[in-house]
Image (cartoon, rainbow, N blue to C red; front, side, top):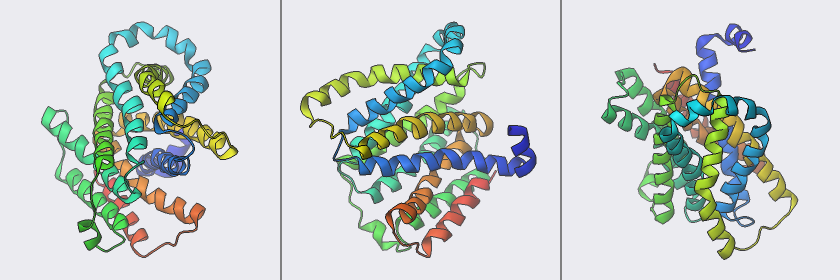
Amino acid sequence: MSAYLERLLGPRGITFFLLTLPSLCWAGNFIVARALRGAIGPLTLSFSRWLIALLVLLPFSWPALRRQLPLLCQQWRLLLLTSLTGIAGFNSLVYLGLQSTPATNGLLLNSTIPVFICLLGSLSGVLQLRAAQWGGLVLSLCGVVLIISHGQWQRLANLSFSSGDLLVLLAMLCWAIYTMALRQLSPQLDRLALMTAQIGLGLLWLLPAWLWEQGSAAPIQWQWPVVLGLGYVGLVPSVLAYLLYGACVNRLGPARAGLSVHLIPVFGVLLAVALLGEQLQWFHPLGMVLIGLGLLCR
């Protein structure tokens, strides 16, 4: 299948195709999380999401998980780090932050991930970015800001930041650390086995916070939108998107893979137009073009 896509789209087309899919899945996650905000607690949503993902993955990954257990144990430090930052920390902090910060601020802060990745990589000596890659980072960031500001730059001056913004910003730093650590894991690890181990450890990190929320939050409002929403966040952004993002990091490196998060507000706009009836404005396609050009910079 991959060879067929390679011939059909070419190397650059495959690259862009891989970059778009995780962001499309995660854009849907933001919409579903906002829709479920009053029906389920943020920590319960995060815990339930990963519990569903674990139950789905385990039957397929169990043989590889048993076979590669010694190799996984050798890299226990990286496993703990990636499960804390990419599984438990990132999603829980985003869900908590979105309880009190507007979506505009959240989308803007989401676009700091590539900046964090580049800074962490440069400071640690892991990444040596060329001028074209820095230019692509700036270009795609400009596209994101254009979409978020609605083409009115003075809107950025009116943004106010709250404790929710700080939580979302901390989540973005977690994702940058996760991306950098993901590249250091052994390429011999089976992707499904690795994902299952990370989710299992992430649930252990989340368990105390989930138990605390159970004692203080209102019970879940079990209705069909909640069931369908949990099914979505447990399968699409949790399993499919993470596996695709891991493939992007392995194929393209953390800096270029990290740039793909700039596509999340692009898909967020398109989904809002398609599902919420919002209007497409002139700055939307222009911002998308800038983001696409930035992603193609090598």
